[in-house]
Length: 213
Image (cartoon, rainbow, N blue to C red; front, side):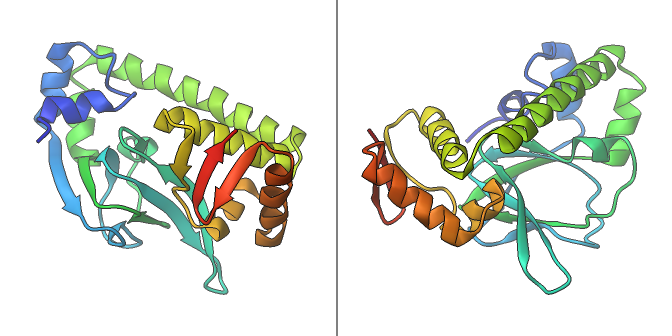
C-alpha cells in the first residue's frame, strides 16, 4: 500500500516540492479512498470542493448535455490531478468523475489547502509554475486538433497510449464512442480511421486490443 508521501509524490503538481512542504501537505490530505470500477468519484452538488490525485487506477471526467448525452472532457491515469483550480476558489462540481477501473484517490479540500497556502510561499510558487505549464499543454493540444486531420489525430493518441503503457500491444482505455468524443470526431469517422490505419499497416486492431506496427 502506498504511503501518504507516495500519494503526494505521484502528483506532478507536488513531486518537485521539498520533503518539508510535502510533509505539511500530508497533514491536509485524505489518503487513498477506494472506488470500484464504474463508481462516481465526484458528481454535481456533492459538496466536495478541492483537488483529487488519482493515486492508482483510471477515471474519466465527463459532463451531461441537456439531452442527457455524455460528453467526455478528460481521461485520468495514475498520478493525474484534477481540480487544481478548486483549491483557490469554492466550487460546486458541475461535471462527473467516474472510475473506469478500480481506483484509489487522494484528495485535498479547499479550506484545508487555503490555510496551508498562507503558510508556505514555496507551495504558492510551485502552484503558479504548474498552472503556467498547464496553459502551454492546453495550447499544444488545441493546436493538434486544429492542424491534424482525424486519422493523424487518432494515430497521435495511440502513440501517446503506447508510450505511456510502455508496450506496443495494449487495450484501449476507453470505449470507442468515448474515444471519438475525446478526439472531437464522430464514432463513424473513428471506425473509418481505425480501418484506414490498419490497411496502411500502421496498427493491428482486435476489438479493443491495439498493436502498433
